[in-house]
Image 1 (tube, helix red, strand yellow):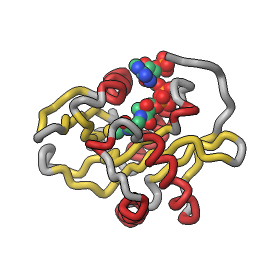
Image 2 (tube, rainbow, N blue to C red):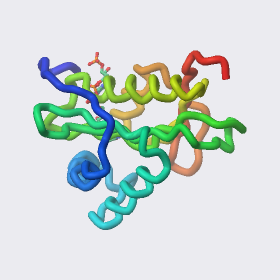
Image 3 (cartoon, rainbow, N blue to C red):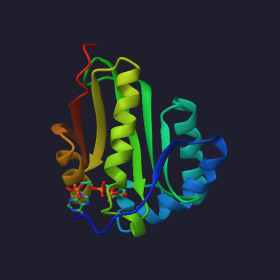
Image 4 (tube, rainbow, N blue to C red):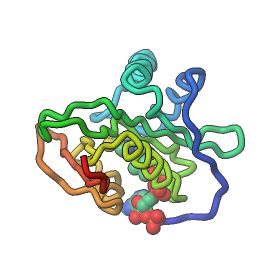
Length: 163
Ligand SMILES: CC(C)(COP(=O)(O)OP(=O)(O)OC[C@H]1O[C@@H](n2cnc3c(N)ncnc32)[C@H](O)[C@@H]1OP(=O)(O)O)[C@@H](O)C(=O)NCCC(=O)NCCS
């Protein structure tokens, strides 16, 4: 689904980037509102929560000065299903204008490298069961479905570290 080549860089998010992520999140989840926050204030609080969980785990993709997408990873997450600490991917969003250009994949690779650097052996995420685009995206990256809870699908992948 690659559309065109584009130059982008992946950087660690700074605290002042957090509020710029709010409109990207809202835009990015258009049409998928059953799985997302819809009020800007709620999204802002969510960004603060992500930052508090793991401020080293949030990465932004930049095209020039503009943030095109972000991933929020968490290297401090204890998975009740895996019974151990895992790298949790709480969020990934690429602005619709910049999709299909490899940005999402690059963000995922960055956060998985970060998890490896923390000695984690498994990455885990939850995705909406009708979010087919994201399900395909994660499968393509090697994630496998491990179970469901209501309308959420749990997926994991091995990070190749001996944990
Ligand atoms: C899921 C999402 C992050 C993907 O971002 P992206 O930048 O478009 O993804 P990429 O361009 O890196 O695509 C990587 C691979 O995923 C697959 N993929 C991406 N978009 C796809 C689509 N629309 N249909 C099918 N496969 C797709 C392709 O196989 C692609 O492989 P390629 O590298 O050979 O092109 C983006 O669609 C998004 O922000 N969605 C809304 C928010 C969301 O659902 N987040 C996940 C919540 S759990």
